[in-house]
Image (cartoon, rainbow over all chains, first blue to last red; front, side):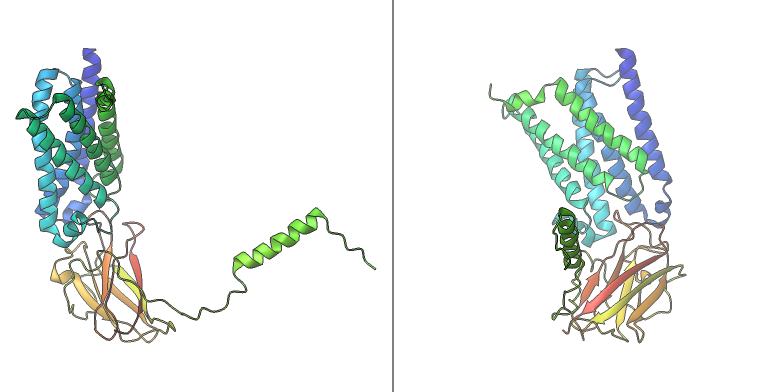
Length: 200
Length: 162
């Protein structure tokens, strides 16, 4: 069991490291300003966090139990919101009209709509979690909404990332996207998330 | 007198030939409406800087933006029309003034402007073109390259009077 966890952790961190390394080696960076490069890196970091977040809740990473995992999940969740904000704001600084088009759902690029949907779902998922910590709402209710929203976040982010011709290398990007989906599905199945949607 | 026999084979053959003529569009007459005007593309006007100067080449070149300008209706080529071009290239961002340039169409309504290699920006390798000179209605185009390795990109304008 410990060995399997180790393998899983190693696979995730190697894939994330390789994907980030490739993105930082992209020839496109030579023709981008620092703020545009920052926007891209923030997007890659956000994608990596999408893989890690469910694994922390499921206790699937070596040396991180469920209690510590849950605690770390909260912090990395805030980090994820921060990474997406940096991604959008830095893109805005790079080319305001393109970001305005994306936010208003009138962008010519087919991936923008998925990215914007995922962003709003992420903000909502974070808000639901924060409200729960303040003690309002039932545990069952907030988990249901948090789980439903993060499903939109992962699906939207994967559709967003895969269609972009950017600094990420295509194979490592696809692997990272695959891991994000697998991690989410695994934890949803383990926690029998769908039961939260049935009447008790 | 030859016997007129309608076998299944005849029926299929004649049916197929009727369908072939019908589908190939042979009897379709010339359309009265003519050549329809080009609509501006979504995002086409992003980072537009009006009145880009007419240049022999943008930057150091190496990439060709080509296309045609025709009149709506009869499709006649329009000569001397100013087309403005800009893109994210190896020499600058879309917003940089030095990434912008303009050229005029020749007697055949064709234009060609050498510019630096377009590189993917905001997720797609794309260029921007504008007709914005007043005589005809303004049109902004945003063609996307099939491959980021391409050395040319084309865009075609059909303009209607303003």
